[in-house]
Length: 92
Image (tube, rainbow, N blue to C red; front, side, top):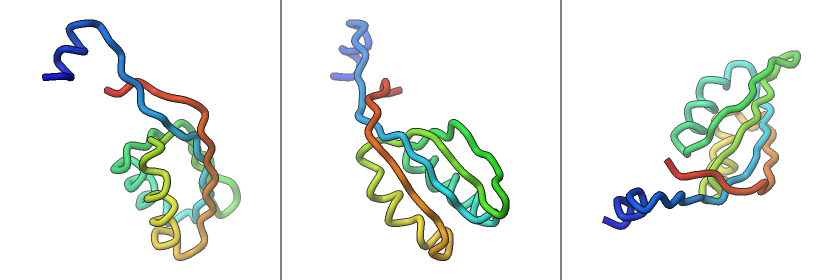
């Protein structure tokens, strides 16, 4: 009901997000991007650099810790993660 009332009032609700960058082995691309999507991440850029993928995007702040925890398992310990809070984004 609250979400409907906010929509009818024309109110935009925002959630805190982090900008992230991750370096992952080539074979980890699918697993990592899939997990990021499940966590609400939005991939803005993916570029191949030698034998790794460099991924950049945005992820809800509430999901950052879970992404950091899952990266070693998805990359056999070879992934690198960096994030910072750039601001908010509208909740869809």
